[in-house]
Length: 196
Image (cartoon, rainbow, N blue to C red; front, side):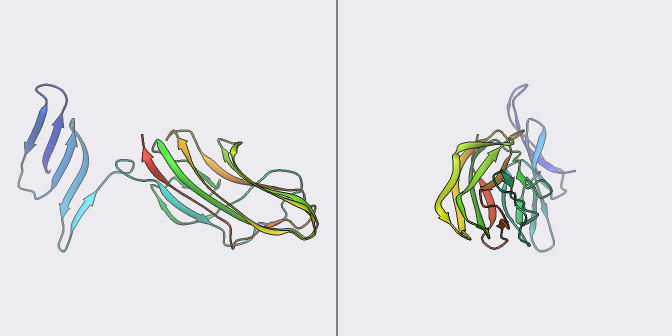
């Protein structure tokens, strides 16, 4: 049991309060508990359910380089690990961010690319829901430079609906052999800037 403060929208409305002597305090809205404060031996423990006031944020990375990237085709950049994954919205299996809170998200991505043959074009692009969206692409044009090496970076703000929208990082090169996205200099991160 717990003492509670409850904001009601039905009946007489207003605030309802009840104490039970347990020392546990629960904050409710229309009879649904949202925050529980439990006194501990040394500190007070506050339990906030996932998705309630939670802020999705993540930082994903590689521990090995991604080799064998095909020429003249878009390839997803994989991120099998996270440094942190608040709200558990980054899927390391599919290397995608699928937030469960609707709002505007600040996103950051970078890919360190090398090739052993000449290339004129290197791209990195955010894919939203399985397709590239053109305002979110970074492009470098070489004048047929042999063994190109570069790091593409990008930061942007985008809206996510909190249910079905997801983001991935994809890359493209027209170099023909030994195309690699290296673990160093390659990353993907983001956080909720404003919920709606």
